[in-house]
Image (cartoon, rainbow, N blue to C red):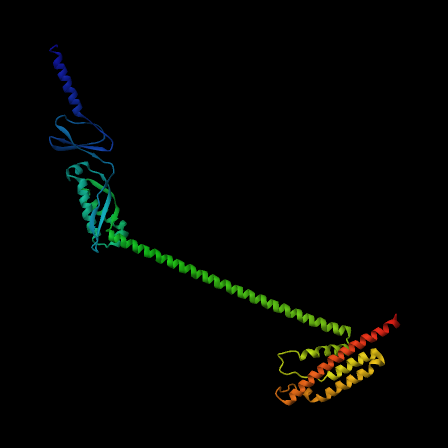
Length: 365
């Protein structure tokens, strides 16, 4: 080999080495701390950078993006002397690469230990229930302490979150029982409220039903009374319009007499004073239609009725007869006899009227 070529090759290798040692390419979101002869010189920014070979060297390479650090569960004692395990999640970002490299040896470990001590101070002033329900307050206090302490380390804590709070198993069982009792209580309250509403609605429905039934009964009674009033009015008008004579009224009067003694609820009854006049009117009426054949029979019945009426004149003026006295028994017997005779007189009068009608039919034809 030519002795001239060897020095050229050596010189080329030295140049390549120097160029490689001089040029530094820094990626985006990265920072390189440069030391010259063991002393911090500067921080390289992203892009193409030149350094002195041999004299300058890269001490630390840092990522300035926001990063997440999740710590392991740490035991913490609450104010009511209960041990709970709490693990946190930390969101941080390097703002000063030089301070992060030279102000603290291991910033992650420092942040972790600071988080544990701060948690113990914060949780130690709260009981278990406040710890479980005050996560936002705990997060805010942790962030304030960590941000103040890590500022000189060139690190900014953006957010601190409590990922989990694990109380002891006995406390978990007690909490589950408490929650179950609370749910049972709410269920019982809702059930009682439902029954109360159902009873109220049922009572209102019954009230409306009774009101409607009462209104219906009232309307029915009004309509029934109105109908009876109109019926009586029509009967009264028909009687006056047809000009019914005393014979028809006396006949209807005698038809009603047998029903007076048939009622079981009457403790007393009065023989009307018009009985003689009614019998006389009926017998006279039927006697005129039948001729002389029924005159003697009618006269005999009239005399019998007159005798009965004369014997009972004293009872006409008195409205009541005491049922226990002898006079009351005689009056009752007389009344029964009068009713029987009146019924017999009516039957005989009907028979004579029918016989008289049959005798007149051939002549009319």
